[in-house]
Amino acid sequence: QVQLVESGGGLVQPGGSLRLSCAASGSILSINAMGWYRQAPGKERELVAVILSSGTLNYADSVKGRFTISRDNAKNTVYLQMSSLKPEDTAVYYCNFREVLIRGLRDYWGQGTQVTVSS
Image (cartoon, rainbow, N blue to C red):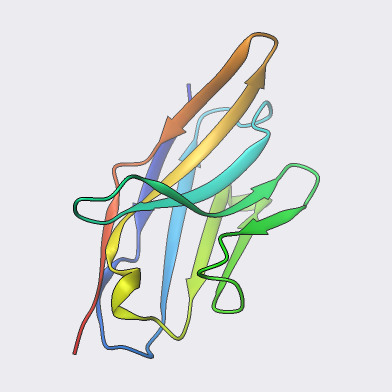
């Protein structure tokens, strides 16, 4: 089992920055992808950024050039550096670790951390 604990959310003014952290406990040797999703009120959860076990990075178009995902293997931690934040970035951000199984996927989720961008 993998457990994920997020931190780093909060209130920030437009144009500001925040860094989210997601620390994993348990064995992550079988994890194929680590990512961040977000869910705004009344909207579906959407992928923000993902880093694959190969090192490949993918971002949602809405955050390209502003957000950076990274990982520290020694600390079993994945980060999301968010810059030039906009009010539309306001959401609950969830960390996700994913295993690709022979038959399907197994997802692990953090508890979520609120990010509010407002003046």
